[in-house]
Length: 323
Image 1 (cartoon, rainbow, N blue to C red):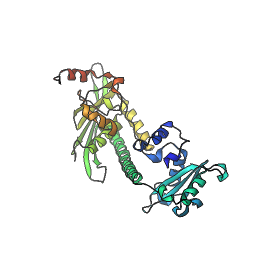
Image 2: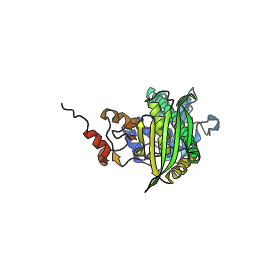
Image 3: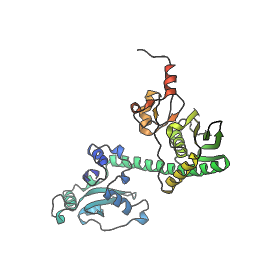
Image 4: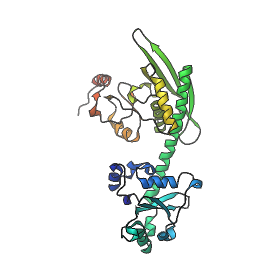
């Protein structure tokens, strides 16, 4: 279906990915920047009871495709036995339905030539749906965790400490407990704020699930990913100027109110870490620990940043490996 959307994109990037079949990079598909997809998502949402039903496309035959209209764009929505709605046909209404490329004429020809089954979801489409469903579940879990992290930070700013239980991504069983401490530090020539996060009672330490949940908590509290120091894989701390934490809470609450994940902010230097972990971490968003002890997610070209001085120092003390 996406191949039928040659034009109308608000960004050229999805069109290029569709042209080369890079489906994995297009998630979530329902949120791609095309007006027809937006209209279909509006008409057929997450609650079938709220669906808006218009006409069944006459030329769709036994498929009984429901029509979606957006300007000249048209789409046909098919509902499978499990109640899942699929956009299986898309195109432009042209020439008062006299043009050979008209959406309705093309659909009519496919049905007449007994090619209608080819419109139905393939095995690849079903696998893609499963991946999209899993990604949506993770997104909902991260949004929920972001909200409780905002509540956690609000309490810590008032009382100095706060804690919360974090459920697993799937199910409601407790996965770990988060302890947050906030304090104002003062010296002869400085005043700053310190956040300390401790992850306790972790069910699967070091797992992908742990790093995903821990990263969301840390990003929610302080988006600059390189500001966090790790004393272990479960204990992190960061310092900032006076008043910055309250500003972060305001920004975090804005994201919670709009169901938007607070994005991580890239760092100013490139860190040293084990090379064989970088590729996977950059694709899956996993956290890594640098030689200097900083916890970070590799999202930038390291050549574009100056090397971390502490990582450089530690690296220089390591024994060299010669072939």
